[in-house]
Amino acid sequence: MGALVVRVLRAMWLPALLALLAACGPSAPPEQRLRAAMEQLQGSIEKRDASAIDAQLSKDFVGPDGLDRASARRLAAASFLRYRDVGIKIVGLQVNLQPGHATVRFNAALSGGSGQVLPDAAQLYEVQTGWREEDGEWRMTSAQWTPRL
Image (cartoon, rainbow, N blue to C red; front, side):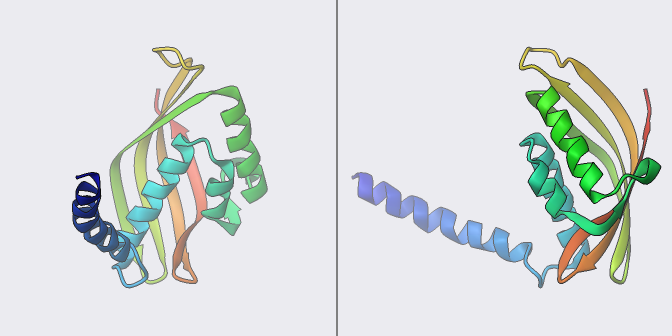
C-alpha cells in the first residue's frame, strides 16, 4: 500500500514541479524571471544565507554610502549573527523593465529577533533596486533604502 501512495504522489507532484521549474527557466519572460529572482533573494534573507545573497549581486553592485558587493555580504552576515530569526515582507512591488535591465521599487518590512514571540528589532524601508541580466540571470546592480518609521 505504501508503494502505491508513493507512486501516486510522484505522478501528481513531479509534473507540477517540472512545470514550476520550466516557468522560471531561461525561456520564461524577463519580468517573470526577475520576480523569481526577487523571491529567491527574499528567501535567502529569511534563511540567513549571506552567500546566496552575494550570488545574486552583480560584481559592480553599489549601495548607500559606497557599499560594494563585499561590504553588502559582510553587512548581511553581521545581521545574521546578531539576529537568530530574520523576517522580511515585501509589498507594493513595482517593476520597470527595459531591455537587459530593470528598476524594482517596493516597501520592505524587516524584523530580527532572538527567537522570542516578538522581534527585537523591526523597521519599514522604501527600497529601490537596479537589476541587469547577466548570462540569462538577473543580478542586482544597485540598492537604495530609506527608513519609513
